[in-house]
Image (cartoon, rainbow, N blue to C red; front, top):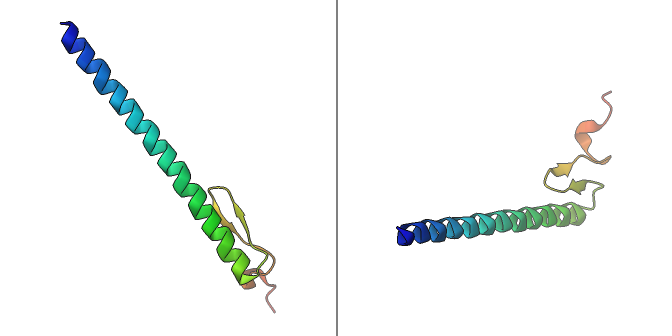
Length: 69
């Protein structure tokens, strides 16, 4: 009976480590994407700013926000 309990404990520990690795991978990916968006906005020379995990936010240089005539 103890071998069965040990097997469950090992399986749960492995699953917990896998979940932690997925969380870390997702955070690294989100940081990389936000850095890429910031670099893209900077290369365009616009006033767009990037917020963490939410993509780009329109800046004052966005033509779609210009007043209509």
